[in-house]
Length: 457
Image (tube, rainbow, N blue to C red):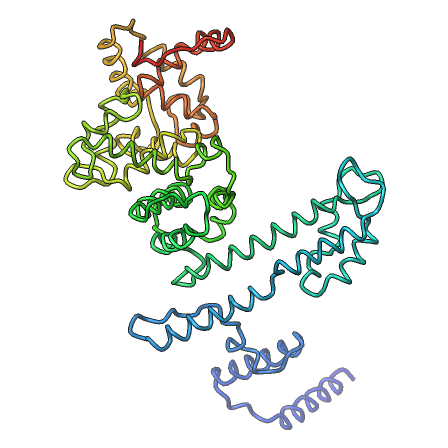
């Protein structure tokens, strides 16, 4: 029985093998078929099957700039950018539309008045948005309303705050478009020459600069541009982003000169004002004793209170751009901006580079001692009682509290908020004297008495 069943299975297998066609394909052909079937079923599983969905459908993300000899392409690019910027400019609210918006807001104010502020509710806010026109729609959203909503018990916002918000947005877009017109490369940044052209053409629109002689325009433009590049281009790439210009306060300071009644104090504190620019340029001319338009180390040593150490001035002339060992006006402006703004990270970076003699990225005890010895030498010349380096070194490390107890990095100086004091101690005898006598100075100030500077003592 078992043998009959076995024989039966053998016959069945023989018949099936006989009916099966012999596969004469090579291994490569079989693998190709497997790959084709896999691709087919995988594509169907992904919901595709369309062969057009390939690398050809990846959005283009790089556009080559026209070369200098491709004049037609350059002209086409310039014209298309001009048309684009004009279209964006037309999308902004003009003076008449802003005035109409103010009338609508004032008409829909909701009592009671909060202090002296007219208020508006969310319902009235939406009504104004419907009547104000399509250009205003982006300002009348729940998000904008919630940003301006503070502590009003009735859930209202200030009409003046909202209108100022709209004005600020319009001004930012106008300024962005205005700056973009000077962006010759069309890459969202301005080179020095681009920003110079912008400021030069801006001068006639600023009443506070009416008194400037045209012969001084080039020096004024250089003075103004250097502040932008000193603080916004720390890596010295020669270009700054338009977004960075808009985000900082420098442009506000520059456009503040449109105010015909700007106070004397505001003018003196504004780097871009005519008195400030003339002050800086006048100092430069006074230092230039040989009238060759450049400053030597000896001439620069009389800067300020004439108490900068010779060691520090040596480093200035080693690291900064000079011409036959002398400093031009542009380099002098960087020097002034650094010393007048020692609390700012960009200024600290400038001075730190000079203190870091071996370009190690940190200051150690040797570096501090090297610069402080020059302070001690000046103290001897002035007949002052010497202060030991050990005491000063301990005070510096206590002030900075660096991560590494033996090294002070630039970031340590910035984080400590004591960078201006530390650098003054190391490079300027007057700065060191002020620090050493800080308690006496505070006491004298509280008594209403004046304390003379070191060079007057």
